[in-house]
Image 1: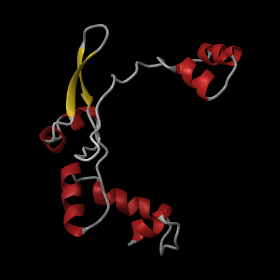
Image 2: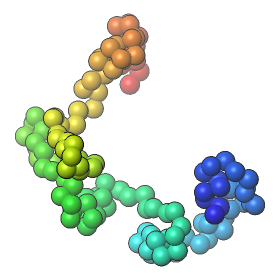
Image 3: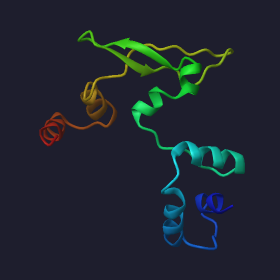
Image 4: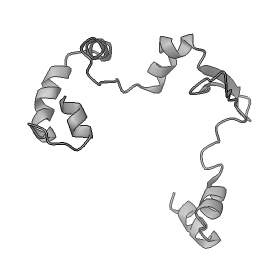
Length: 127
């Protein structure tokens, strides 16, 4: 199978650059659902790239109670991902909400990466 050989770095009959145009022609008038259904029927590795909105409406994730309502410090309620996997033998739990953007920069840049306070200040100034 072409995709497996390509991913494993094995020799393929046609380079990917030659395959892009035929692939584009094949998929351009099909929906994500059509392509996913066909790939499942034919055993071809293919998966849609979904927007956040599409993921929030994905029935499979909804059916397994993947989403949780979380309150942010400002009181805003948002839908957030719950646990990726569930195991009865080693159950996981959620300890805290996802950090806000840049919330742990000092810990990561200074503590984990060992950058000096000067370099951290410079990095912050550039963003």
